Length: 553
Image 1 (tube, helix red, strand yellow):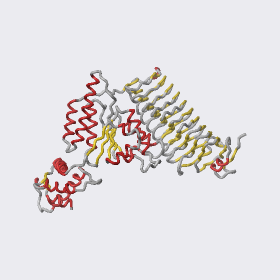
Image 2: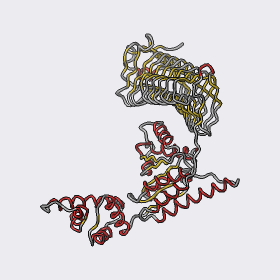
Image 3: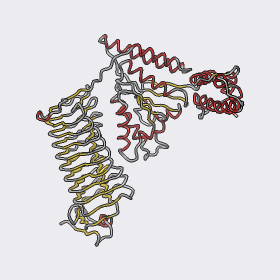
Image 4: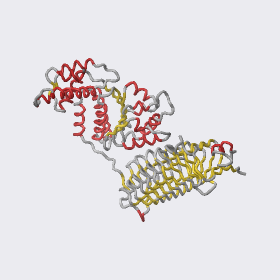
């Protein structure tokens, strides 16, 4: 027979009741709001509202963690409201969790987050607020007759091989996607209603393969269902209406079986994204000329040309019916700041587009803060989103070494970003060029952060510090672009100044030249104002030795 413990009354807090309850106990919650967090580890318990559903509220908005955290064991919860702040309202890590007639609300976190082999059985559960609705990571179970409404990002996320069955569930008015399946997620979505999303209704990426049956996807700002490169799955007797065209968007390398409800098929039908690209030899030569026009960087220029030559030869071999090895376009740029790494990365992306290797060659620069999240699982989501947004072009990660764990601190989510990148780079090496950049020594430590990281990159390009001659040329070019000229003797003075600069870790290379010229502009302005007359055009354009001396004083 189950033991019933009344709270409040017999015990001052629910935590007190949980501590003494034997396995198999039923903890009954009197109507009211309980400002506490519940953590149940390795137990077999039932927690239920004594009154009608929703009469007992676990309020953890101001507390540091989820309102309910279940770790292994077997827990059943009935008729309870869970509210959290910047954490998921409910988490299940391993074990089995049953939620019945519950209501979940979160601030920055998810309504429910299941991971590490957990099995969740949710019925008549409503998620009414949160960043995400339901998140399954390497977890499974059944979601039936539930509702996810009005979350700020994705309604349901299924990733890391998770395989829940989501049945007769409504997902509505989500800020981003209704259902997002990636990293080999394999959910079954049956008779669900997905609508009002800020983007697509259902998105499948990174090896995802859902089974979507007799579901209605409608009134979405993005396409109804989108299958990314290499994804599979089944779309069977679904209705896709009032979405962006095409109703079902299938990448050329994806292979889902799609059968729509003929009575309500979208007018646009099933679309296939055209990933074909054409070579543009004239543009290739123009971009190589632009690269050659950069001051210095002889070794970098030679390496880039060698990469372009290899791509050309591989294309000739392919046309001749010869075997061509799998190519990676990922690169490592090492060296001090201000040596042109970002500029070369942009040109490299445009070259890959002109060669027909990448669809768009667009350049996206990110740093640690764009990839690393605030809690377990958030980083993988952020990193994957950034990676997907860069598909078809170049993802440039500046100061990439900051992702590596500092001193082996296990709590640093930068390692999670690295581990996620390693898998994505391998799975999509022909669809994106990832370039990581940073100081030479620190980048060596970065590559040690994951055993498979170094092998993902085709080549390392070393950007050396500029010499005095090159810095004078850079300064002269910057000045001329802004309609300034150097008075006689100024170039020699600049050379002497740049020769004396210490080239330590703080040396900014081209940035030093730009910073110096900015100081010279200010010095010139003061000098011209003191003339007592209107300066001539020659006066306005000329930098003189006194401007340099004032700037470096």
